[in-house]
Image (cartoon, rainbow, N blue to C red; front, side, top):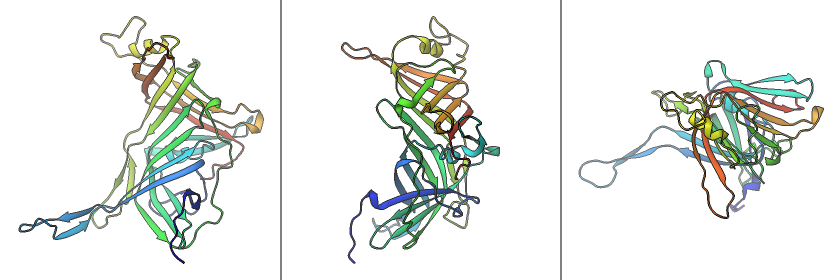
Length: 326
């Protein structure tokens, strides 16, 4: 049969957590969210070699194999956060079903996963990206929209086959968590009214590690970690200005501003008992880096706040599934 173009509806992705870095996960059967999409990059770092006597290359060689994935989806279940943070503890919540608490791995070691990318072509293509690690995770809540998530990942290796296409790929069984279910507190207990958008970036600063003898990375690490955030809200008071300055009357001249004690970002459907679906991200000391507040005739005054938080107090998802499927 002749080759025929396809669209995204004839592709799928699903993931599974690896027990050994770069070795295919025992089970690759979990969806990250709704409306999934992926942009994979495969780079052999091919390098031309020149010599005296000719302007053209005489040889070439392949350098390090480097892979990158950009994965987009809409927030529903919280399970993907185990890949971002490294570890998950499941527990009976006692009121709302089950809680999934996402924490750093012991020793802050990077967690890896395998991702299966299937394409229903005339001759099927199934690629498995191995040794995937999250470099950054971006979660956005914006008025009038679903809550999009972007995972920027590195990976070490891949396998390609022309069989094994999953005829029933994984999907997320949970409902979307959307803008109308969100709230923001800076600090905990002080709700920011009429937030127009917030983007939280969990930056892991991942790096692949190679050694002599192979162009395939054999390990990956997370080097530094920070929580960055951008907020847009209606300008109604000067409380965050004072947090930026470190005092009520203007910037401190010598000592460092203390910042806010915490930041709490929540999505919750507000349902009772086991119908509750929520994600609560509580961060530690939160510093405001800058505030921008354009003031124009005939326009709503919006203040734009950039900041970062230096620690993770707790990240907890609530649903009625006893165990995170990863």
